[in-house]
Length: 214
Image: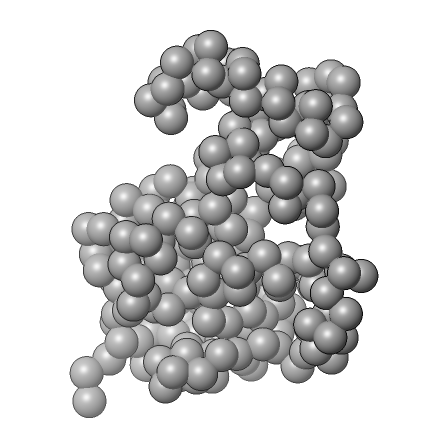
């Protein structure tokens, strides 16, 4: 039987090496990348069946990357392996097109099973958070992150890049938009989130898991 083509994405090399060891016997590992934008490019080039990815990644976080991936390759199966156990992240991941969600602490025992499950057309959620996910589904208003939901995909991209220390000009160059457009989006983000300084934006992005604190 032909092995499934799997692409790995995590910004920690040791995590990628661990995933390789867990999957190399059962999967064809077509590549490994360390940031969200590289992941989007790699999916186009490598055409994987499954992507194993984190939420917190440089340049483009996993949630926004997932949305782009599903547009580029709708049939690809996305499995998030992350430190984030909060249901708000789980909900965002599945809304973005995920088929699986598990925690890094349980990857050693669950990852291969999750890959097989999503390839069979099922969804996979680690038992460690399954009860919270069901509770969140039954009581959506209690778990909804209204402020993040108010931001567009472009605004989230800009928020992350601002929080990572890029200037408005650098962000404009990366996203191929004008400097003025970046400044407009930044001002709109601050207005919507009721924030007043760039430092406030950085703290907010860290709290939401868009960037990792140093």
